[in-house]
Length: 141
Image 1 (cartoon, helix red, strand yellow):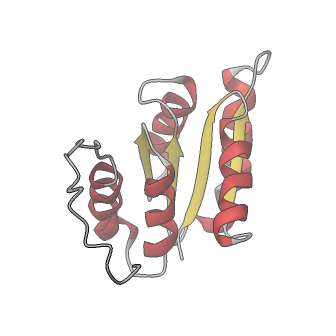
Image 2 (tube, rainbow, N blue to C red; image 1 turned 180 degrees about the vertical axis):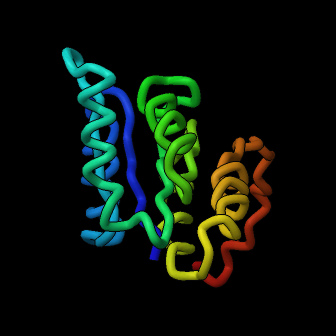
């Protein structure tokens, strides 16, 4: 089972944690790290490093709010020096749910594309259509 670390600006990570707990209950092997005002990049890096050692053998996936933002960039820097770290930016709730679903399915490298595709496919637009108002009301249904 690979480790999941969710991080983002403000209260992004803990808000995701509360939402996931509401939907699917408390999960194991997942960390939530906020990047708040007044917190430096070095502080964030130290928090990330604290989460990695116990999960390094099976891999670590960082799921961050914005590609190019400080949580994303900090995780990318770590991934350059430590094998088995993958970093995704611009994640959404379905992406995190997919990561949780796939984390027992084998090698992290093999499922990263599936996690990304799941997140992309979850983004849809509503297409307004005319409703048929010719309902047969004879049977009350």
